[in-house]
Length: 270
Image (cartoon, rainbow, N blue to C red; front, top):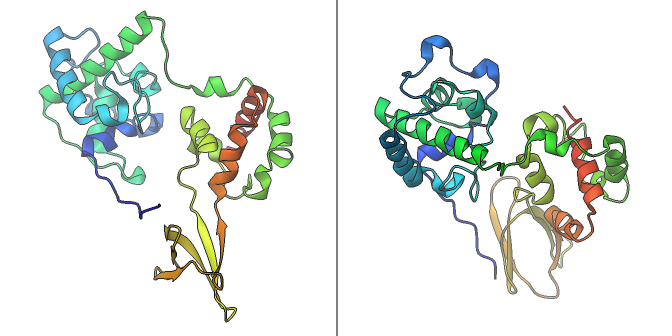
């Protein structure tokens, strides 16, 4: 039985950290905005431990307890921004100024707290590198396929073009989504909206996003946001349009070559 979804909330710092992978170089803070030099790699153990405590309290739900990626957030130890950060200025600057265009608010940590968080992230990055590990998916990982064959799959066996357009909903997707985010969106499009068209005995029909659906009742929200519901009886016809189901069906059909080629093609849509 399906129930209407309930919105979840999360600490502001999670929103801040989740955008570390998205920040273009030109949006990063200037030298004048740099953090204290004490926020550097090779920081004192006490500073790292204090940052670890704060990070695990505020950020572990999304980014994992070791900053290697969690349920909904990207890995920070594979972030290019973190890799190029030298004295805390890159990370601290992004957290402090926010990304309003991405829905990320400003977040004001004390100098000591910020230094600890930055030190912990860099320590996690260093530990991962020393172990020879890399847990994220980088853009280069998704460029090993053949883009031309990926386009053929998109237009042919994959049936992607029946719902998607490289000049429509997928325009610039290779810029908007990078690395693991692009692969996740293709394989598990959890933002795809399921719609229903309900046709009454009179012939009048209503279409909208499904707001509720079980074995007895179906409800939608129409284009005006109005909630409408009907009993599931033989005289009421319900047609479901669930675009995510096509992706689910393909999970059992993809070959490794299909995925690599398709990802290579999607990255050409800049």
